[in-house]
Length: 98
Image (cartoon, rainbow, N blue to C red; front, side, top):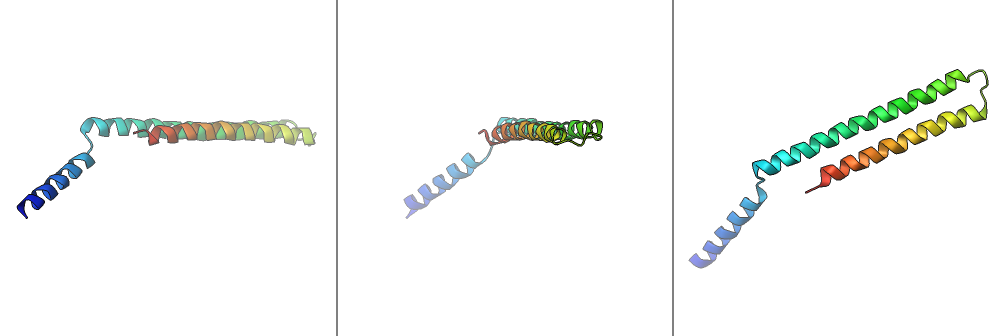
């Protein structure tokens, strides 16, 4: 019985110690999270700039109101969105690193 309790205690201690992160690991994790947060903000900026550029195209060519103008503006928005999603995907990869 004592032997069983001894092994249970050792197992519990081992599990509890393996669950604790070292201060270095905590700093690495924080750095990854900070980097990913900055990348998310960059993605937001990419979206905003793309939208602003598309709006400028629409305003500049409002008199024409052509399908080509709409297509150009939509293309700018789509490109900005793809770039932003790519940045966010890379940010998620950074967050998921062990």
